[in-house]
Each structure stands twice: as structure tokens, then as C-alpha cells.
Amino acid sequence: MGDAEERYHKTFSISWDHLQKDCRALAWKLLDVRHDWSRIIAIARGGLAPAAIIARELNIRVVDTVCISSYTLRSQSDTVDILKRPDLADMDPKWLIIDDLVDTGRTAIEVRHMFPDIHFATVYAKPEGRPIVDTFITEFSQDTWILFPWDSYATTSFVAPIVDRIEGE
Image 1 (cartoon, helix red, strand yellow):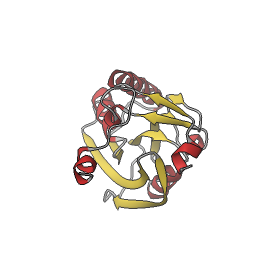
Image 2 (cartoon, helix red, strand yellow):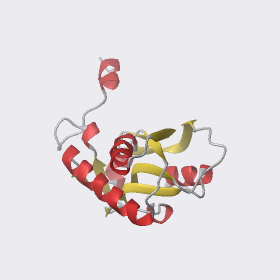
Image 3 (cartoon, one colour):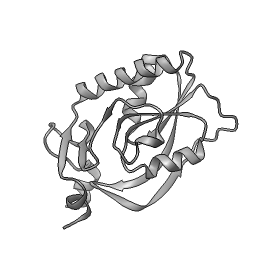
Image 4 (tube, one colour):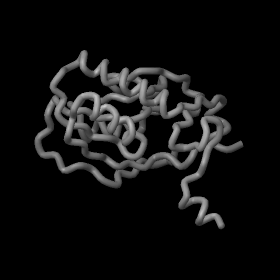
């Protein structure tokens, strides 16, 4: 039995519409924290779509990325690789870190080390990672695989990225 089968016993599919509603709910919650957010640092790749929605809702025009690799399909790798980090000399409490999900917290811990004083928000959280983020909308059980809309044609099955399907030929 592989890592995914041992770790995840349930799957929950998120549609684009559901994601947009949850991101808007997160934006409302973030307005309760402060009204003058000035920059978003999106955790790529999962945080890109939520960051775009939240940037629109909060009228934030400056969006940067921190690019981290810690997942391969349904399993987490043993290492967290930082592929790109923004060059930010003076951090500001008006900045936000946005991601789609905090799962075990391994990626979130790395990001916290880089940006210890910036407000960290995710759309979804699981129990192991929840203490690392400041704000989230919905909590899922640790054994639930979240199937995001960019990972599927419909909301019921995983679809590999095009490049993976071409390389497999």
C-alpha cells in the first residue's frame, strides 16, 4: 500500500464555484483583521488561484510568489524544496501570505521561517497544519484528500497535467 492509500481515506472535490465562494469568505474574514492589506505573497502553485481571487476582492495590486515543492500527486515528498523566494528586504504587517491548503504544515513552516511576522491565510486547513496559519475558512480531517478544480476535468477524478500525459506516451 502506497503513501496516498495509507494517508488518505476520503476525497473531497472542490468545484471552481465552491473555491471562489470560499475565497470570498476568506477575504471577508481578512477584512476583519485589517482593511489596508497592501501585498500578497502566493504560495505557488496551489495558492495562485486563491491569491488572484483575494487580490481582486481586497483590491490588492501587488502579488508575488514563493515557489515551493513538497507534493507529488497524492503524496508528500520527504523534502521541501524552495524553488523561488521573493526578494523582500523590508517586510510589512500589511502583507498577506495566501495558500489553498495547510495539510501537515511542512510547507507552511518553511514559509513561516521566511516571513515570520506576515499574516498567513489559507482557504482550507487540516488539524496538523492549522496552528501554523492565522486565518482559514474550512477545516477538513487529516485523512481527506482535497481534489482541487485544477486537478480534474469534473469534480470526481484526478487528471494528470498535460506534460505528464505527454511524457508517459
